[in-house]
Structure formats: C-alpha cells, structure tokens
Length: 188
Image 1 (cartoon, rainbow, N blue to C red):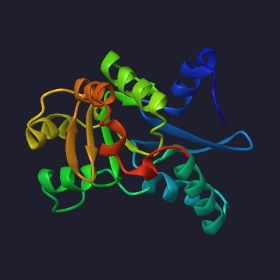
Image 2: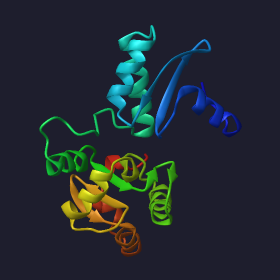
Image 3: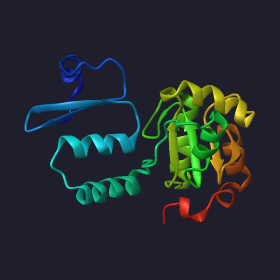
Image 4: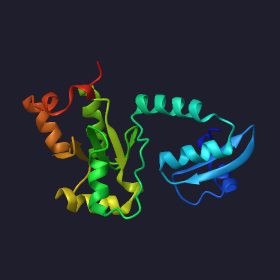
C-alpha cells in the first residue's frame, strides 16, 4: 500500500511509526506488521514471514528491483563481532562504484549530493551502490576518519576513495571521469 502525503500522518499514527525508514505491510487492507530500519535482507525475511509469497518468486522480484535500482541486497547493518573499520571496508567494497551521500540517490538531501547525482546522470553513470549516511551515525562519523575525508558525498571505486563532488567535477572537466570508473557502471 502506498500512501500519499495527505494520508501519511494517519497511516504513520495507525502503524505506530516512530522513526524513518519504517515499512508498514498490509495485505488486502489488513495490517500485517512493520519493519523499522533500512536492512533489505531483514525486510525480505519479514515479507516472507507475513505473506504467502513464495521465496523464489520474491527473490526473483527483488533481484529485478536490485538490478534496476542498484539496491543493496546484502546487509548494510553491523555484523556480530565486526569492527567499525571492517564494516566500512565491507561497505566501501560492496559495489564496484559506491557512493556515501546525504539522502537517497533518487532524493539527495544536500546540494552537493544533488550535484553528484546530476553529474552521474549527465555522464550516464547509472550502476552504483549508494548509502544514505543519515541512516547510520556510526558510518557517517566513522567514514570521515576511515577515508580521511571530512565531507559528503564520498565516491569509491573498487573500495578506493576517489573524492567528493569537487573532485568528480574536476574529472569531468579534465576528461578523466570515464576512465576512472568501470565501464560496466555506465548505461549502454
């Protein structure tokens, strides 16, 4: 069920939404439950537990969505016993091109993240992972130290920091942009 802005507060109240992101699940108008947080593997488990959707059917649909929108199906949450540096290393290498930004790739929150997404669109760089640093304080603060880069967005290729929007803009200007990224990252 999707909710327009005019209905969102009443749905949020009815579902007991206290933080975002929260996904509320309904089937035929019946409230099944909610999931708080941004952990796709756990959302998948919740969907399978609350519905009669077959595991293979759900997996096929989700993989199709992942290919279309580059959604991370691997967990972005902390794993038991994992240090913050290990987690950051895992996140920065989770996609050949990985962006840490304020907001979502389709809804950037700050002007620098908006600029970066506009550059990627102009250059037809469409296959990349994105992580909203507002969703995780430990990642937001830890990545600044991990990368020795104090601002967002941060762009990584094969786990190596390329830089922020200023560096990306300079790469477009000097013609080095396309060669810095895997060719598979670009739309054909």
